[in-house]
Length: 298
Image (cartoon, rainbow, N blue to C red):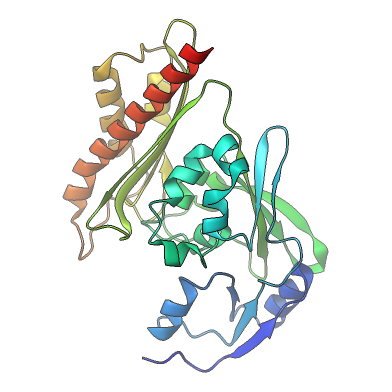
């Protein structure tokens, strides 16, 4: 099927893109990597009046680092991010998760911020963003800027809370703390397919091997990703070497979902609920092993 007819505009700056968005009365779509937009156009599941291309806007393709976070621009490709030495050092959880995103050809065009904005139920990047308390820089009409946490961004059952006529210009991911372990696990039907369920987790242990902080985020199980706060709190103070503690946390994380488990032609809600426990357990075990390795080196 051919895409529907629509106008195309190439924005010179991020501000210029927002002007186009505001002038379209909500009927425009942003084109960055296009790996989600173009298939949707071809399937005619969407029919925008205008496509606004932001890939030539200066500054949006950059990766920069602060003392506590890494900032990824809206035009930064997934492959560029995956290979970045800054990303591998400061947010290795994101670098690892990106290897699960589709295939190399798709990652060479797709963008990290585009994954966040698309909010696909089986997307890997939104899960990592939740686990790392990422913040989105949003540009609105008149040059107004605001930051929105991913927790607020995905705090509805499906879709996002992005204000109309706004553009996400960058995403800021919290950098890995000293000694912090990370883990990412995904259950797929086949390689390069969307996740049936995926989990991103981090752990920080004290000198006695007990958990002093934990973060667990799940995707694919529900229509939007979520943080398993109760499971995180339940791990704090527990001995990390106790496998039963991790199993209990995995069950709790899958059961505390804020929305119903989803069913589609790929898997039932019951199956997703079961494999979610496996995904969380694997992510926590990987995070624990990296905590231990980091402490031994110190």
